[in-house]
Image (cartoon, rainbow over all chains, first blue to last red; front, side):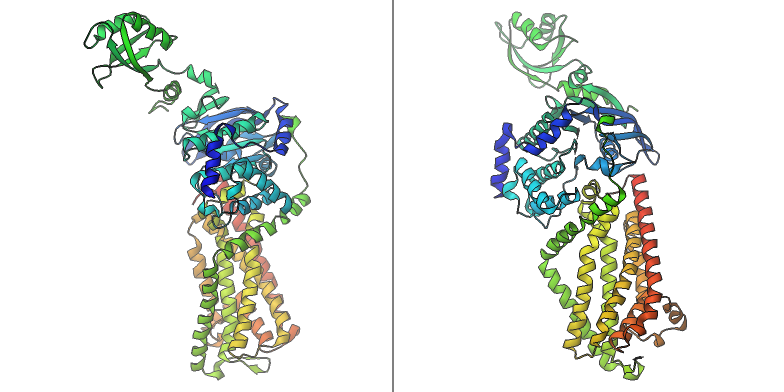
Amino acid sequence: MLSSSAGRLALSGSAAPGPGVDQREALAERADSRAPVVEVRSVLRRFGRTIALNDVSLDLAAGEIHALLGPNGAGKTTLLRILTGLVHPNAGTARVMGFDAVASPRALRQRLGLVPSGDRSFYLRISGLENLVFFARLYGMRRRAAVARSNEVLEEVGLLEAARTRVGLYSHGMQKRLAVARALLPHPAVLVLDEPTHDLDPRAARAIRELVRELASCGAAAIWATQRIEEIRGFADTVTLLHRGEVRFNGGVPDLLAHSIPRRYLLRVRNGSFSGRPAEAALNTALAGVGTIADAGESSEHYLLQLQHGVILGDALKRLTEATFQILTCSEERSELEEAFLALTPEGSQ
Amino acid sequence: MSTFVEPLPSRLAVLVEDLRKLPAFLRRDFLVALSYRTAFISDALGLFFGAFIFYFVGLMVDPTKIPTYGDTRATYMEFVAIGLALGVFLQIGLGRVAAVMNREQLMGTLESLVVTPTATATIQIGSVVYDLIYIPIRTALFLLAIDVGFGLHFQADGILPAAVMLLFFIPFVWGLGLAAAGAMLTFRRGAGAFGLGIGFLTLGSGAYFPLELLPGWVQDVSVVNPITVAIEGMRETLIGGVGWSGVATDLLVLAPLSLFSLVAGVFIFRLAQWRERRQGTLGLY
């Protein structure tokens, strides 16, 4: 039963179970406005002498997926906890749909769904359905409505077949999907997801992202905390990069890429018409003005190509092939996003 | 931003909404308890083994040392059965109330609970609703089983006053439990000191031995010890059959003590919770 359900999600891949009709209608109303649904202003949070967040601000519009990116200890979870009213800021404000996280936490929580980072956030001795019904009732639903809504969200995340199975028997991936289902219970205007895919296999992770993307397309805003930077490409609309509690970057993903250092590629190159190893000097001559190349040290045919700013890979490869070198393989040594991430969060920087 | 803001519900509406959530807690805890069938059976067996031990202890006790209730001289088994029942009631009740938030912390569910639009007080109350129903029933069944099994002579017309006495005793247990829960939220393992205090109060309550056998200063404290008041009141009515008039004074003494315990417990728990939110450690263990 469990495996078939898990398989269903895995197979659903590009067609991940999506939000129900009610959810779509509720969210569509919100999507009409471009006013921010999440507003964080100059938030400061200290834990003893440690400053966990310093002057952090961000806005989030309906239908927007905002990635909260940062290494361990950057302050991502603290910011999410402030946003959900679990932690009070020392200064600044956090609002969801106009409701202040400190002054009106109840109204705020009615409009917010949280997917916590931990694995254990359910009662393991009772079924997934009973867990959801319980939480649905805490959102104010009567029992009948709670059961109906729970079945609805279970279907959305592809867990309907495992609805009556004890959560203790669920896999990590299933528990995470159940956590997403729980977050969907109140038709949230804002989804807060704290590293929701960190322990999922790539297919399950993709399915969760697609589900969130679909909810966003219906008008829900999502804050997605992650340290897996590759996850945000093609998924997040905007990014806030946190480092040691400070905002190092806030903007779109393409803007983040602008912070990347010149890209490096690992090439496997052979002399086209001559036998033997290409001379490094000859390669650099061919690349003059577009980049530099150096021995990668892995084997006699591997070289590291570093492009100059504004140069695209195709131009460099064209230069090499015109100079009669044979390019056997070419792979990005490190992603542009990762480069940007590392450039903005240097080790030892304060 | 202002276009999104909806009017906040009134306090009464919030209270009514939260009260409607209590059956959900009851169902959750019932289902969880149902999943631990073996624990349920061993719990009942443990109680009866305890009763057996006291039965044999009772055979060695000089009956003249046992106090008289009404015109009835109690047997040691009758005397201790009520003390034992109320002592276990206190221990379990206190343990459950105190451990509610701690249990949620350990299970990792506390954060998920408190991010729902539910008052923490509702979560606290909701999480003990099952125990508030189950433990008195368990206590009553225990007394009934002992009454039948060991041939005791509890007065049938004393059952209602005894039940009311138990009802008045519940806020005392609840208040202590909340205070202990506050200590556990703050110190994570702060229940030890509470256990010590409760152990002392129970020992000095005359639950297992006649108060006359205890040191004078313990007897002095017992006058305002709610456990003593409740146990003695229940003995008066169940063994002595003194009826309402006999327990009225006990109820009058117990009521303010219970109320104080509850108010103090709520205050301590809220203080601990406020501190946790300030420190950002609520949900962590």
